[in-house]
Length: 180
Image (tube, helix red, strand yellow):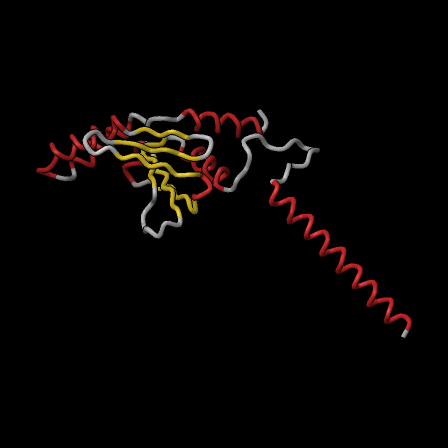
């Protein structure tokens, strides 16, 4: 399998991802145990969070939602992503899970969204990095040039005109020095 085919297969897996790994529920149970006498309340809250937690990777962004009484849904466009962090605590590593935290330039200190309970967190992180940088889903073929958006084409034309004008100025200055 070529690297491009492997990348497309991993992207297809990420696009099909919609729920956290089932081991996340056991991680939540362990976290609830740490609350001591509040265990019944904590485990119930995290149980419902686990069963309502969904991810949806769309063409323009990622959507995360959870909750029953207090339903929360966050949509984040790929172009707004500023940074991506992967966190894996001791217990998460023990379960083979990770959390991918996505940050924007919103000014908050925490992550805008957290994708919890991911087994193949590297595939999700790499997918998000490619999308935030604006890479196309299909890589350009070996001999073909990638098409530039309309705004970039105008900049390229302007830069070529400036380069031509500077070259003409340089030739004129060199010609003036040669006759003097």
